[in-house]
Amino acid sequence: MNAVLSASNLGLSYPGRGLLAQRQSRPALRGVSLRIAAGDSLGLVGGSGAGKSTLLRILLALEKPDAGTVTFNDTPVAPGPASSLRWYRRAVQYIPQNPAASLDPGMNVERLLLEPLRQLRINGDHRRMILDALQRVDLDPGMLTRRPRELSGGQNQRVAIARALVPAPSVLLADEPVSGLDLPLRNTVLDLMEHLVHRDGLGLLFVSHDLAAVARLCSRTLVLSEGRIVEQGPTDAVYAKPQTREAGELVNSIPRLRRHKEDHKDRA
Image 1 (tube, rainbow, N blue to C red):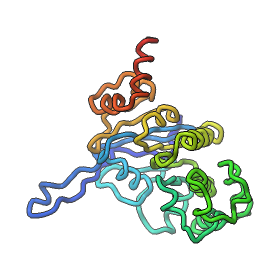
Image 2 (cartoon, one colour):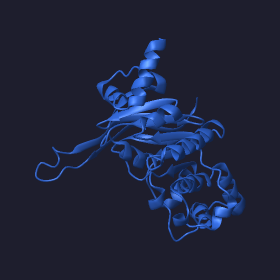
Image 3 (tube, rainbow, N blue to C red):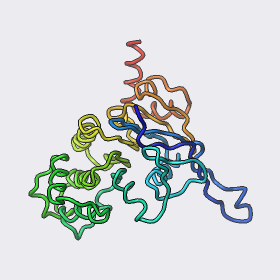
């Protein structure tokens, strides 16, 4: 499978404070590498402070690493002027954790979906692009005139996903996209994202504390701890027989995953 979005040996340290600042500098990422191909779903898991948000910022070209590279289809990517990154912003789109905070309450859904097309200077039939994006997330065109406050939490999350889809990206970077949803809505959004990967062939990086969601959605999983990848591989293998303490603690913290691991052992 050819890589679309790749990161190689990413490293980043934040400076410490005080007289011993240099000695106290804190590594946020250490030698992190990954690849996300078309039709590929990669889960990124780890405890608080593991470095997941830092990695996302680097992959979104919002922060520059101290070491390592990010490439898209073998083209190097680094933070820079908006004019030099429009192609990348179109190809790699972000789905936020909290759509209520990311969607401008003063805009209706049509304006929210039109905004990235204008910012990225994408030509064409904008109305058709917006309607296509709505259809892909199973939202009725009648919602175009509504504002975020008039929509449910699940509908707002679908709008956020449609907003990411409207520029026609190749890769989605999703940051805890189901964390604020109840179980039925969570399952609906996971079904939608599964379709985007398997039906539409998008690449997906799915960052989550919800290991059960990762187990359902992602074919591969990376476990991040203190800025390092401590384990990676097929999701079923990582969950059924974790090779490191950090991965084992994550798996064993979720009762459903403990049962998954035990069932796998019984079948072996």
